[in-house]
Amino acid sequence: MRTAIINGRILLPTRIVKGGVLIIEDDVIADILPEDAFSGFEGQIIDAKGRYVSPGFVDIHTHGAGGSDYMDGDLDAIIRAAKTHMQYGATSILPTTLTSSKEELFCLFDQFRQAKKSMQNGPNLLGLHLEGPYFSYLQRGAQDPRYLKKPQKENYMRILELGDGIIKRWSIAPELEGALEMGRLLRNNGVVCSAGHTDATYEQMVQAAENGFTHITHLYSGMSTIVRKGGFRYAGALEAGFLIDSMSVEIIADGKHLPESLLRYVCKFKPRDQICLVTDSMRASGMPEGEYLLGSLRNGTPTIVEDGVAKMPDRSGFAGSVATANQLVRSMLQCTDLSIVEAVRMLTENPARVMNIADKKGSLNIGRDADVILFNDDISVSLVMISGRTTVEQEYKAFI
Image 1 (cartoon, rainbow, N blue to C red):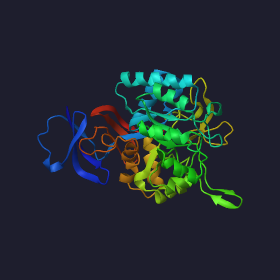
Image 2: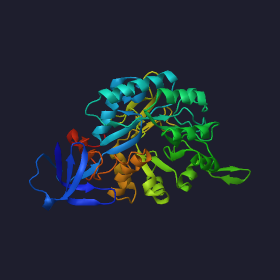
Image 3: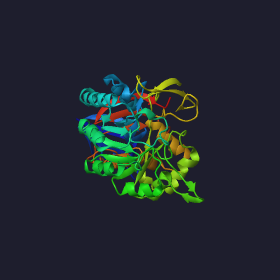
């Protein structure tokens, strides 16, 4: 099967190609031709009508969407949440857990494997991101404190054994006893180890970077910052995110978790190729405002979705994002001086590199998987292709 996308603005990692033709053969990007060299093509032709032709978005931190959470323990919930995000341009996703009982976690393992086998015309399920249960109580945020633990080898080895092949990322607090040993083990097993919900000092974060931790979970959310002890100031995990060059960071760029000033701050002081955009979305993503549960239907935490964000019932703090992938790019363009190329790269090539899949995902370079989306200047998505097959075609899909 051959497909040509014409009349679009093709977004490459470093530039925009205007007047080019993107050629897809079977399930990979085969070529980019000048328009004047494109003739006699045999195959499907898609007219982009001036829209951007972009690599599909890669969301490496999402808990749900469309009224469903990945912790619901239900095959249909996994598929529904994944396909909802796909409508907004996410062609690859990393479904993410919350702190939970072992029974709920192991149920997700089974359901996730079934979803990978049975889901048709859906996004790439890259694997699972385990968020917890090895977190700081002080930085737990909306994570259920009943299930917080310290990393004990017999515990996490059992999880790794049952999640063999599907656990691709794990967020833990590196200051906890046993966390550095766990970080080394995860690195040796090809699992991306991320510092999250942590009360670590800068010095402890340096140790983490030396022991397998390569990424930082939702910068500014659930992490320590500067404190004073005996009159002296000590830097925390937040400052480490800017100072440790080997660690990439992710931000929830919904315009709520981080205001414009902090979005600009991150872009000014962290190398832009080290920044990833994530939705960290809960089940209300793509849904009307109202009351929802964060986490599973059985053990979830009640939340109120209003003002474009999920809040704790007493409105004392946020309880997750309701963002969609295209909204992240839109927010960065509205709030910072990023170019469209740079903003898109933060949700395509950068997260693909963090997850060690940039040789296949995250760009329209020749030989990459043909995960392609079309969107207009407002980042409203009109077409989604996964592995060269059109899965979504609509007038537009904007953030609701």
